[in-house]
Length: 290
Image 1 (tube, rainbow, N blue to C red):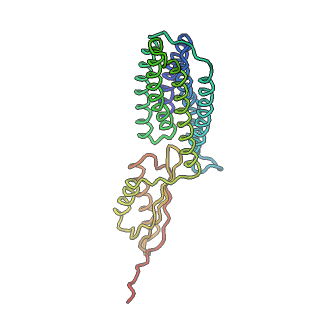
Image 2: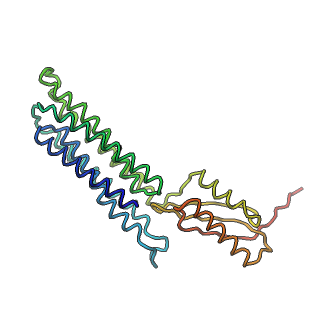
Image 3: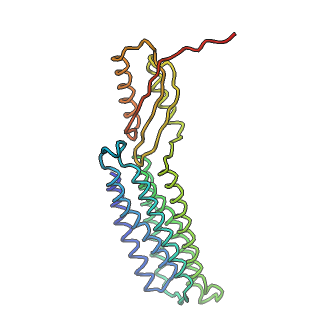
């Protein structure tokens, strides 16, 4: 499902990137070219994201008993490094001599790309949150920032076109390109930090999820005490580790039934709970000290 969404994004990004670069070169607008290179990072995000999703969906093996979900984080780190490099290239190009911008039609091109990117980014983030895909959220977030980049491009292209009447605006095109390079750099650094932290083994601290799990555990009278609930992220899915105390006279067969019931219901609550481990110890009632 993530791969299909990324493919839709990839096709739209190819179209938008081509549109910006072609008309940016025809009009000699540094800002529109910079925005096109910025959009190129979205295309790279989708290509690498599709590859990462394929790897992440591989079945568990002997060396990876919890699957390959963390490949999503490593893929996203690579994406962020590519974005940082593109930011450098945009900045370097912005320092070269500027040309007079006279083609007013590039304003319409810029506006069209903003609208399309807004639709695509909203779709990717919404879909990513729905299926718990870090790659889709990463791609959607980068696309959302591309909308901001597009808005900046639109403003500075307009100022550049007005430079015929206002000489002070003759550097607007170069300035717009520099600002877009800084926006691109910010995206790359932010994504790198977030995904690096996740790759190191991030715990999901969403209290609503933990509360749901505890409520499910409380439905079983055999569970006397909930010691700890830990949710570990593995890309688009999670591993849940539960430590509980049960009646010490509980028979093995009954304990097995309780564990099976808990796992079945938790997976129904959240499909992302792919691996559930339940650690059990006998319940010892604490006596109050006088």
